[in-house]
Length: 312
Image 1: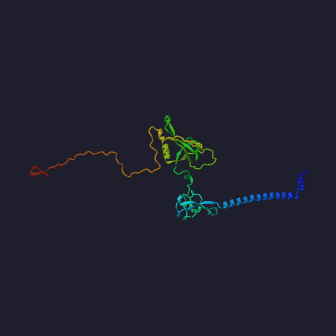
Image 2: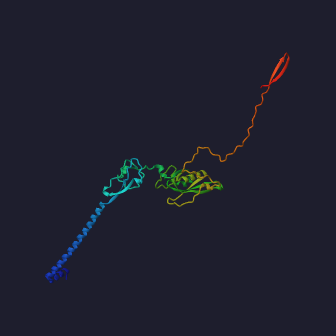
Image 3: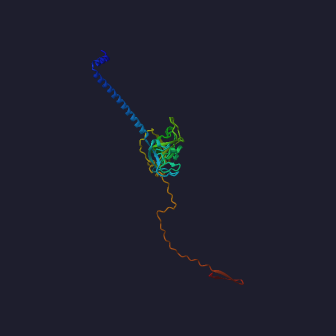
């Protein structure tokens, strides 16, 4: 027996009232399912609308002046603050990063409460060329190398090396590391690293970047003997114990010059460490010698007489 035919036979055996009740029940079930589907779609639509409203109501932070900033004034962190505004009200070109403004200069007058725009500030000019390779607080110093002391030309810009000092001759040769993990900023006159370059480039000098104290140590080592470079792997930052080149001599070398402060110059003559007392010499009066007497000759005919006359 087929299923649809069985339903019709079953309904034919039921009373009209029962058939009506069954039809009403089926209609109610269909209505409930339809209403549930409609409600589900309405809720989904409401969530979508709420999300769109939230997106439209989102805010952004912009920099606003705390006070009147005169043209040419250096802008500090206390001169500006971040303020939240609706996203659609953010002016074009508004600066949103506090750190990018601190240290810049106002191109023109900015009133209190005005938005800081990118066109209203002037960034400090960044150093270019070789000077840009020297970090703040560091000093560049150049010394001579050759194929042996310069790792056969494989030392180039941005290489990291240890510097070994060698002094003495023959059986008295001594060596020790004086500086470790030093950054090379130039090889010869080239200060830019060429990507993909693998061949050696022999040079006669290298320039390194060190702090002022290490610069003094390096100058002493250059004067005392010969310097060798040992090349490090780019990722090797292993600490290395170093010594001053003066420790290689029996008599220590003078301390390295302090390059952080200018030498003091005195305009006064040096003060003697010990003042000797002069002995007193008694003074004796010296009288002049008496004048010699004058001689007077008196002639009487052929007779001559002489008389001594005092000069007083």
